Length: 332
Image 1: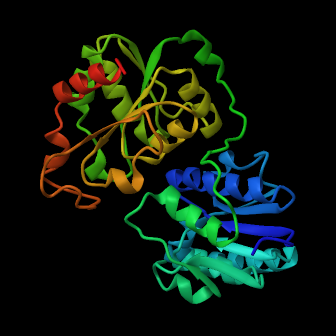
Image 2 (image 1 turned 135 degrees about the vertical axis):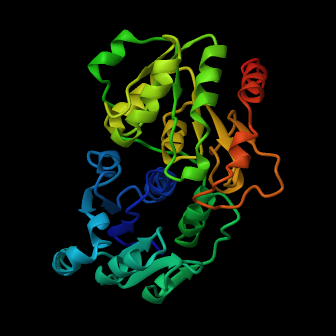
């Protein structure tokens, strides 16, 4: 389907982990059709991963978070109109919606390309906007779902890689060596491991730790730093995505709940220790070999709930269990 075409548009605005997973799709497309131009629609806040990317010719940034607010309705209508005009001018041969939601379906339709591809299992009536649908089970890993579309487009899957833009090492990173990276927070409340558990694990392991995260994670990261008895340093809110890649690359390994930043660590070539409770490691676990996944043994896990009062599944994964698992894993 891609043979003979010159320009494609990938619609994958968010989230961080999903964009990282989609880089495997990008790699396969460019490996099979090196001359094809790739443009990408991405949400504001994630563009750092795609601007100046060697495989992406143009990045189109949308402020989708503002679209959700009723008070911004008039602005949203104007932005959609401008986006529609911009996309039509580009004259794409194929548009591929890897998101599968109403807004991504609309963007795909706005592109006016003759071929509009998306998942048959897309939500919010998004398949209505495609003229070519691909079926891919949601029970398999997200990376493999995206590669099903690449295969449907005529690509051979020779390898799975996550090409990243060049990292940018922050100046303060020169002061740190032989450290373990901790990602303390996930977007879902239910996926978070208790802060006291992180503190206890940090005290047990023989290493220094860098606690990373966004500005919104600074309070949690500071608490771990405060109670770690000098073994941890918070750098939350101090890194761009490309600087975070440099932090991951220099670290020993990464300890994390199920979060998009975990997938960025994997793409950076780092082994991760992933703690899973309410979500499925089969769908969104660290992709590839060599990682350690520690899962809840409760019958209610995974439940896929974003919020949970009891939080049993994460609390039953004790620091002692994680410490013992890491000790054995590091011997391999």
